Image 1 (cartoon, helix red, strand yellow):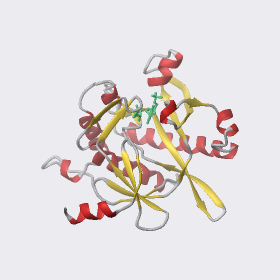
Image 2: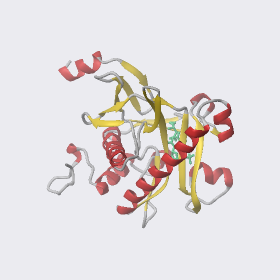
Image 3: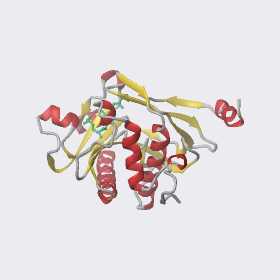
Image 4: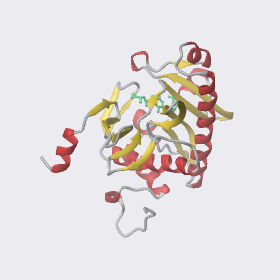
Length: 260
Ligand code: TMP
Ligand code: ASP
């Protein structure tokens, strides 16, 4: 076993999810997020291993999270460590998936009978209770406050955070000819003494966004896997290529890149 594998084996695993593994970080209050190649959909009914997906999502999540940090939208992201791992701050995850939609697609189209691709009159923020056994049901502010998952103040802060992320991501994507249809984020609490603040956590990657080519409508996100539309790694590589974010070993030879 090589030295790196050895180190990884000794590191304490905190949690293994569908797409990532969390390990204890080097300092108190830190965590190492390891991005796997596993892809799942429909609550893991459909699953596959997509070679290179973890590397791409690690890079892309780094790109979006550090950009958010730079404009003053707080995230858990500290730094990328290597091809598959990043160092993040340990947070207390609020058990909600926060979805923002700009264009109808997926579950809102099904639930409300709105044709996919219809522009929504304004960004719509939705909350889903994170519980795989229940299939992540949609919940309202009433449920969230009554069951104590978040306070009224948290709700206001979460909506504000989600809309700032939406403006940031929409702008970046439109700059490279991609429409941000919708996305999901997770939000965590960080305690500093008695003071608590909310930060964007988990990951931001094509696994949790819908991204359509602005001209052709071609899907460049996990729907490629969910709906069997082609090669998922190719779609994510295209997103990374347009953003100038490519893992070192995927850089096409002889082409200039924007990696710093
Ligand atoms: P939906 O249309 O299926 O409700 O999905 C809305 C957005 O949330 C879409 O960008 C995909 C993302 N999403 C996740 O990241 N994880 C999930 O478990 C689900 C259901 C959706
Ligand atoms: N992430 C969820 C699952 O694995 C659902 C999805 O993204 O479609 O199963």
